[in-house]
Length: 345
Image (cartoon, rainbow, N blue to C red; front, side):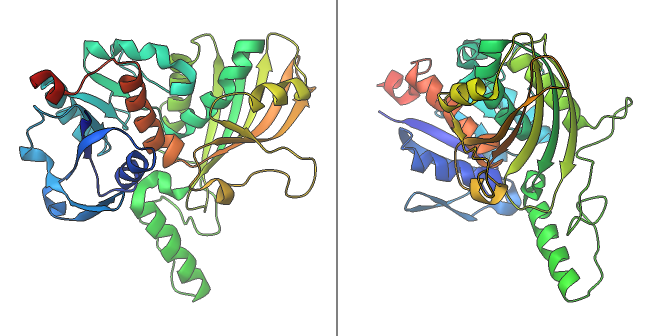
């Protein structure tokens, strides 16, 4: 018997990706319900070879729903996730609303799947920030072997991380540059076409942005609270896939060859690392793929036991929708939940 799954925010970039991935991976569903705000009522979305019409979140009854994939932003999640969870439906939330709650597990299945059992406290599981998800997938196997002390990461984040509006703005501004029309920033604080913006999310008192703080806090919660991490997050004129330049300092000696061998065996990781032109991955090639790609692995001799590498992943998939579906798969595969219809029968 399958599970009844609701997708909240089904008309957005990540919501549509969630529907695609549920179908692609053959998730055991009895029914899929796409939900959105009242202005999207009746909007058609695809689920495999089916076309579904969205329903309104505000008046939906979750009492017979098993899993809710929530991708409608933090405010909606704060208001609705506890109500949905109270009806016995497990919420897997893609926003930042619950990530730092001590009673809500923050899960990347390749990294800390065992922590998922804590979901019973609130019936909510949090998905990490897109830039954190791919980073911890790469760091986990290295941390297990060599014990990470410190990480310095610079991100090169695509505009899809800012939603459809971000993608539209890059397209419109690029076109405007070519036809010499005025370029008007709306979604981003400065022009994004043919430019870089070292600012994602709001600024905090210490000068870091919220995006940078998220990477620090989430890596500690998911991987190890002892790890020191500093980040610089940059928006780049790329439609899909986030890239990261990662520098790691370990407690134990490590060579590039050893790291390469460990990463090749790691779940969710693909190593493409040839010392030749084109022997590395770029965001364009990672788009639409599930893996976290690692390239440019090399020793950093400026610190003791140092390593540097390049990390790229599709932020709409592993950074969001895929990770959420993988969390749902862990719930099912570990028999942590049963379909409500089965219990009723």
